[in-house]
Length: 134
Image 1 (cartoon, rainbow, N blue to C red):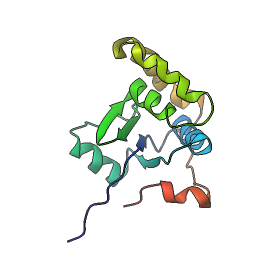
Image 2 (image 1 turned 180 degrees about the horizontal axis):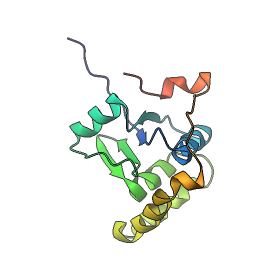
Image 3 (image 1 turned 30 degrees about the vertical axis):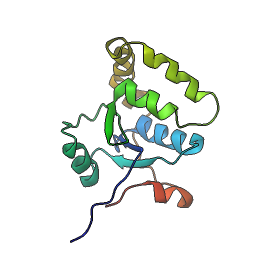
């Protein structure tokens, strides 16, 4: 029996969204700790999120860290903690209640396809190891 792979620090993103794909590229370029990526449309993405009782919404970024799922603005702020430069300082906004932070996230999510039109991202050879393909 094959043992299920265990991943930590997984970003679940809309694979058909240009803005989302640009965000993945940004994370890859700025990461100070390893991140893994799975499209929300992938079988792996659906399987992992289902295991955590998450009903997938394509307008939402999810982040798995230490077996806990974060979504929307909470996911973005948790991801920022693992980036180089001043991005971890954004985590200070975590003190703002989620119900106040998420409307800003939702506004960007609503217009994400207009901000950057969709394209299929092919990861660079050195980044392929960070994409879950199971």
